[in-house]
Amino acid sequence: MARFVWSRQQADGRIVQFGVGIVDGLDVRHLDPGTILSLSAGIIDLDNEGAEQESEEDLGTDDTASAAPAPKGEPGPTELGVPRYPGASFDGRNSSAMSSDEEHYFIYHAGDSPEKVVAFYERELRKKGTKTEGGVLFTVKGKPPFPDLGVIIQENAGTYPPAVKTIITVRRGAGP
Image: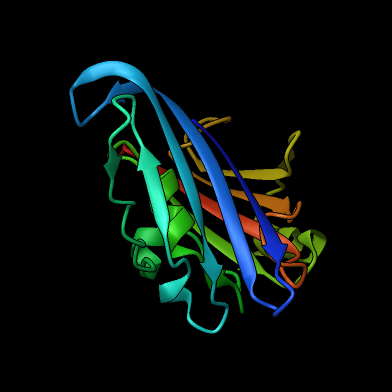
């Protein structure tokens, strides 16, 4: 799966976010192998995370539109499985878009630098992260690069508004 998301600030100050995603695998709507393309666009409401995007469209291999995934609710501490970074905001829409039956992604964004977020997780998890091409990976359970439980810390490369400095992604696989 690959997903690319970018934002643009309108003249009136609103933030418009666009996304393109592609999944190569099983089209669960038709139970056939295939490639699924999703396109999204909407207004980000930073004051109301639950209403993050006004519209989103998912185009499948059969070129029929279907509803976008509903925003995922923020997990509790047990479901998350790792400490939540203090002051981070949960991104339910992208968490839902990235998740599947086999793996769950919980995406947060923070105004602190990636270095500060990495230091927090080093203290809390009592281990060093592994530098990767895209950021820093903390493997909590399982093996990299896709642990059963892991935390990925990345610098915001324009996916979110400039006030967001760091993206924190918690990955939970289907394992116990």
